[in-house]
Image (cartoon, rainbow, N blue to C red; front, side, top):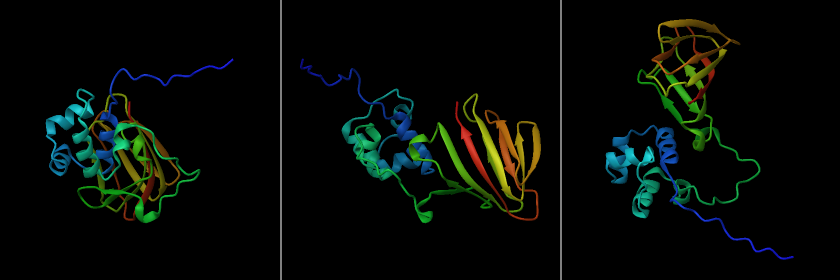
Amino acid sequence: MNRRTTPPTHNEPPRVGSTLAALRTARALSLDELSRQAGVSKSMLSQIERNQANPTVAVVWRLANALGVPMHELLGGAKPDAPAIATVAAHATPALRSPDGRCELRILGPIELAGQFEWYELSVQPGGALESQPHEPGSREHLSVLSGSLEVQAGAESTRLKAGETARYAVDLPHAIRNPGKSAASALLVVLHA
């Protein structure tokens, strides 16, 4: 018996909001910066990221060019076959610096998980502080100190960690990681967004 399969029908256009937000966050771009680079209004970008608007092909093309990705990555369409093992060279691992220049976050997680599940290699020089505004309600961080010592603050509570220790804490309130010591510290930081 021969069965004919019909391709699935799509009742709504692809939603690019979460992909756009993840790509923008991974590149440490504000809505203003991406708006200028892509020539798309800030309000339109905000609506797209919240899935309140679907962009035209021309807007997707401008955003893809500004972010340096192929259009299909924003649209969530078929992607080329990935190799069984994908390697990222050390020099190609993106990194962010804190405003004080004493903290570096190397982005270890894949871009498509940004805004959901992220992990970083964190280096903090003596006196350095990585201070953050509240994330989404229910979000948590997990900080495992590899060398040196770090102080973690979540709201009014704080604790000091030494090498080998891990702290798990809520980040839906102001929070910070500081190095009050006299030597550099390194850690792995995992962020679970709610």
